[in-house]
Image (tube, rainbow, N blue to C red; front, side, top):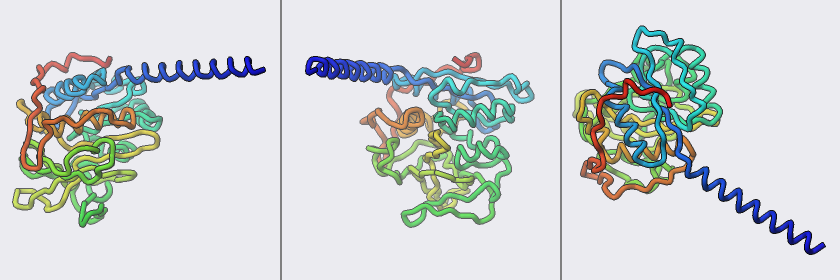
Length: 318
C-alpha cells in the first residue's frame, strides 16, 4: 500500500515538473504581433511609423511581427481580412476607410476573447461612428466627434474628472518637447518609471473624448495655454482599457510624417510602447526600465535606434 502511494507521489511530481517545463518553454515562445496599416490621414504617414514600430518590438526579442496592409483609399475593402485571432496583440497604425462588416466583427470578437490591442497615436482618429471600436479605444479625436462621443477625461486636483461640456474632440498645440507625469505608479506598464520625464518633440493630443469605460489613466501631460491651442489641462497621454476579456494600451505619442521622427526615437516612447505591447498581449511586463530613460528635465534618444528603410508597403501578414 505504501509502495503504491509512493509511486503515486513520484508520478505526480514528474507530472508537475513536466508541466512546469512545458510552461517555461511556452513562455519563451515569441509573442505574435500584427501591425495593421495601409491608410492614414494627411498629417501622418504609416510608411514612416510602421517600420519603426516593427523594429522597436522586434528588438525586445519578445515579438515576431507581421504586417497587414489594407488596400489604398477607394480599394476593395471586402478583401481585407486580417486573421486577428492568430495574434497575441494587434497594433493599430490605421486611420482610413471603414473595414468590411466581416472584418469589424472579427476584430471585436478577437478583443472580447482576450486579444491585446495597442492604439498608436492617430489611429484614435479612426472609425468615429463604429460604437464598439470607440469603446475599445476609450477616447478618440477628430472625425466629426463631439460631446455625443462621450466626455473629456481630465486630471484635476489629483483625480480623474469626466467633463461632459459641449465641444470638439481632438486638438493639439504645435509639436514640442513636454513633460510626462506618471499618475499610476503601480500598473505593470509604468511600474519603475520616474514620476516625471521629458518626451521628445511631439504633438500633445488634447480634448480627446469617448465612452471612457473601464479606462485607467497611466500618465498625463500639461497642455500649456501659452502655446497656441494649449488647453491648460493635464491631458491623458497613456491609458489602458479593459474590454470584456481584452486588454488595450492606448498611447497618444508618436507623430510621424517625415523622418527623422524624434517622437518615436524618444526612449520614453519606445519603453512605454514596448511595455504596453507586452502587457496588452500577456497582462504582464517582464522588461526592465533602461538606464538611459529620460529624466525630469532631459529628453533622451534611444542609442540602439536605427532609422529603418521606408519599405513596409510590400510586407504581408505573417
